[in-house]
Length: 501
Image 1 (tube, rainbow, N blue to C red):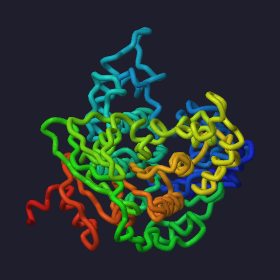
Image 2: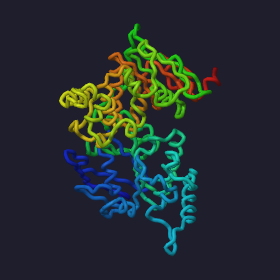
Image 3: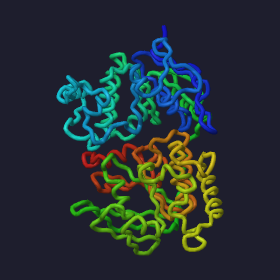
């Protein structure tokens, strides 16, 4: 019997890059098929071909055994394929119903039937079991609500094939569980889904089948029940990943106190926190979403206002009224949203690495020594292991892992004494994660102080010398040694330690 969808011999090249080579892929009715691989493996290119964004250089797309030719997203949609990209394709100023029926508006006698569209939209959200306000622009909805608007749009066209690209990247655990519940219900109705995720545990929880890509080629397809996580990782990266978290080298016994926050309070009535970080130490910030981890770091560097802040840096009292003050002192922060806050996507790798560092290459007033700047940039690219064909490549064309390493390279060039990493591996594949873990460890071993903010407990446990646990804006515990354990962290992060103490 023919699969619902078959891609045969798909190839696609771009200038200087062969993104896909003779790629085969099959999807059955009522199947959740995970597509995985390192960043740059070809997943996004394959999905853009399937959704009509790209045309393949060679190969065939067959649905129910019949060959299809897509000249755009509308053609793919007409064939029953809906794609929910990681970056939503919603119009922020339109409400949910208007977005769902955009380009397919319900009319009668040439007049728009707004009430009918709202009734149908409400019925779709009731089917999904997820309420979404219909009286406000989607730009004012939460990320999870926007995600379900995209899914409702797919249901409205009666899509038989649903492609979900990193759908849980910005969802809370509860929202992720609800999404998986909806996916299982859709599977029961015969909808086939392609699920792209960097989270291995999610793949094993929700997928029936897994296809692995590497360097634009299909490595293999396996049933989820027939493989374990280490073997899947080895398929993805082409080598066995020994432990990503070898034993930490402890800071020197006489390590200098780099950061001494004697008091920091973001708002009146908010908790007053204190923390310290020594040279060569990685201090983890752990807690559930909304616990105040990132807010404290942003308040520290002056990005958020504070009502009280008493900070000593390298033994001196400092005033950090904005991020520029922090940078002058030698404090750098890699933001949670690298694309929005950490990079100029249209600019080159060289220009992004040199941001905040141009004074080092100034020859006279506004004149920059280009050769000195380029040499320093190339050195940083090597140190950060950035994969790019040229320092003049636009950052927006790099994989997520390499984009993150460009931000790291900028701070390597600036020689910051304290580096704050906020969710440094979000949306990054396992191979790139291991490289970033190694970079963080090397920075600490070179004598820098590091603060690591992460929602992934394995990162916090595996990389931190000490862990500050947050709950409702307060540091409820600072753990070290054997106490750095997922159970202990969650006890203090959820307030459960009060119940067992």
